[in-house]
Amino acid sequence: MRMMKKNKEKEETVRQPYTKTTAVVQVVMTLVALLFLAPLVIIINYSFKTRQELYLSSPLALPQSFRLDNYIQAIKKLDMGTTYVNTFIYTAISVVILAMLCGVTAWAIARCRHKFFKFCYIYFIVGILIPYQALFLPIYTIGYKMHLTNTRYGIIFMYVATGLSFGVFLMNSFMATVPIELEEAARIDGCSIIKTYFTIVLPLLKPALATLIIMQSFQIWNDYLLASLYVSKKQLKTLTVAIQSLFSAQTSDYTTAMAAIVLSVLPIAVLFICLQKYFIKGMTVGAVKG
Amino acid sequence: MFKNKNDRQYLFLVLPGFIIFTIGLILPLLLSFRYSVTDWDGIAAEKVFVGLKNYIDLFHDENFLNAWWFTIKFTLGNTIIQNVAALLFAVALDSGIRCQKIYRTALFVPCLISAVIVGFIWLRMFSNVLPAVNDWLGTNFNFMLFGSGKTVLWGLLIANNWQWIGYWMLIYLAGLQSVPSELYEAAKVDGANAIRRFFNVTIPMLAPSITICVVGITTGSLKVYDLLVTSTRGGPGRASTSVIYQTYTTAINGRQYGYGSAMTVTLVMALLLVALIQVKGLKSKEVQA
Image 1: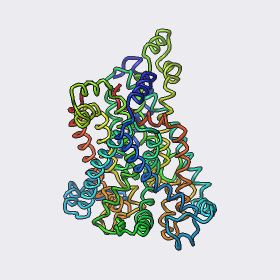
Image 2: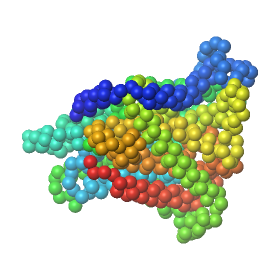
Image 3: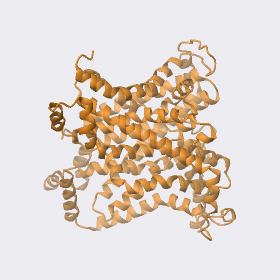
């Protein structure tokens, strides 16, 4: 199926002649792309400037030398050792739990004919229609009452709970790619439902799970509201929370802040560039029929 | 209820996710309804039932109404600009230009950045970088968009659109690439020009993507908060206070949990209503392929 699509794409590019209009579109899109990239280039440029250059020269001027002072400052001010590790732990554990739960939940919902599972599907979709940000207040209250705030497992629990809806929806749309005949054969051979999932279905779901893991990692890594509500202890803080306090503390000297931005975006940017294929597949689920 | 042995096994598989989801999201949803009819301050053990008083107060609360008004304008602006721009860029990238992937990545990268950081980036862009561009070009545009209540909405729209256009563009691009080229051929044979082909072939075939983008952009804009924290902090004055921002100040800083919960409920209702209208309205326009 995918091969066919690729071939079709190729045919089209060959068939479409490079006309004057195409050339104009090319020029316009180049300008648009440059405009979109400009703020990022400016940030990187800023992150190498000294405080003196910040005040005396134009923001557009290049730094005199590529010194890493700002980066060293940023690492210190953000307490990078702690915040990086925290964000990484929260993201990694939540995402692994999500991958385990969403696959199995979506599969059961897709396969079981019992009414309860139809209800389940709608039940989980509610979480997509109402993003957790809208419910931040009761989520905070419940976390406080259940002693989930200021604990690692508390925030991981909430990331899992708020990520489930999207995960189940995503995995559900992949279920059509799992051939039901294989499952039936396994059942006839005497496999239980649970064993069928782990031996037959789970290996087939691997690419889908990769998509899920990438999509959710980027959500959780960038999350601010939940982290700011659940974590106030210094040793539990995440990168976004630390960066926010750095922004509000240093309004005039922002070269450090710019270096901090570069450092916090870097891991996600690298992840995206390496795994673009999965990322795009995850995003376009449901947008294309079939 | 679950007499069949197989059903019980399926249930066993669904249960962990079901329970976590219920505690983490559905219970808070129900709690917000429960707290919204009390005058709870977040600390006291006793929650006095006040009926619909909080909701009646909301309708007289100018700050709350202003927050809704800002959120609605922000949402409408985003839905229109992002959809149109994303679709245009997708069509442009799909028109046979070279190096499509480079453009795609360039436009997409901003959405990998946390909204908290995007807010700060544009704060600096408007107050430092763009005025320098003015000096450089010798022009005199007013770029201090976050400085006045009249322009702050535009500033935030620029920041938000810069972040998200590439994301929705990718979805449209995937939709465009799944339109069978025979349809265009047939339209060409029938003598339809490029504009008519766009409106009579492309748009109807893109209906599923349009539904996803419109619903996604609307719900995404209604929940705006992160972007404001580092850019405008709801200001100047209260000009860019969103519903969630207002709820945060009222409930967490002002210790009016009951009242804040009523605000939450209005937002939840609005989200459900918007999703319902959009899915119903847009689904009916989708072509059965």
